[in-house]
Image 1 (cartoon, one colour):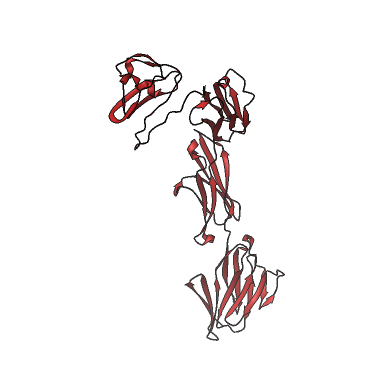
Image 2 (cartoon, helix red, strand yellow):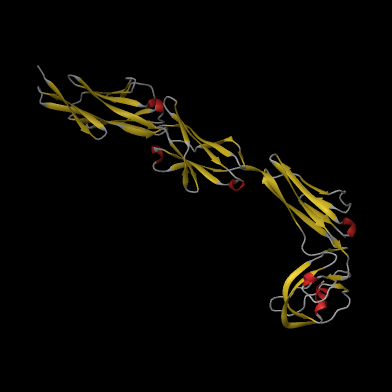
Length: 398
């Protein structure tokens, strides 16, 4: 009577079954190698034979359906192909692998007794690029709630939120969908106006990515009320000049409509409005007043004002000296100048600007405080001037 003894030896990714027939002093062995493949890829399932004597070799799928019988196809599934059948190696391929193909594939060797080994096929499902959804709008002074999602991976992927190179801890949720897993990570972060446009990223890590990662970039969209600032013209406006104002508006969302108005009056007929720009040509003193620019969005309203003061053409512009210049500073007016003790001068009273004396340069430094009428300027500055006599200082400067 023939005796058979079986030894099982551990080798990488495999278990070897050896059938030794004492009657013939002949040992046969079959080795099945485990396989890991990406979904959609091609798996190679190999059965290695030792001391093969021509016995029947059968390969079965995890449902124990015979795929090949001694190299002959037994199951009509064209994804399986016999690519090699030798006394040492039997190999089949499976194309377009899915998670449903996962499981143990049997390599069976029929001798006096039937022996088999199982090649385990594992299928990895790499994640797609994650998606980011806004669960709660980010409003200035509140919180932004963002969720990063991966609907499908195997095994479950790892998600990380990153901002400025630092990880933001998130609340992770994982759901088993049978063959695959869905994963999400939710964060809540306080936001201010300055955070609008800040860059964040959600990164997915998975064994199937080979050390790489799938990244979804996201920019914070923080909503806030508008701010308004009127950019005024430079210098003094006289009759006949043109006025041009620009209303600089910021906000999220950016206000679409900008409203110009004049406080306690209607806008002049010559006023031209083009979005944020307000213009009046050929100014006259009748246009004097306070002009208002307003803007609003869903989160608030803001306004700024500009007071227009048109001067008579007889006002002459003040000429300021450069640091290396010794030219005098003069601003002429058609109205008398009132000098008070606050000026720090020896004389007080009304001085008429048409009675000028000369200014001498490179003399002692004086600190002048001059108040002009109308209140065009209040001058306070040191100059290398000497007034002869001193009571003429403000007269010359105004």
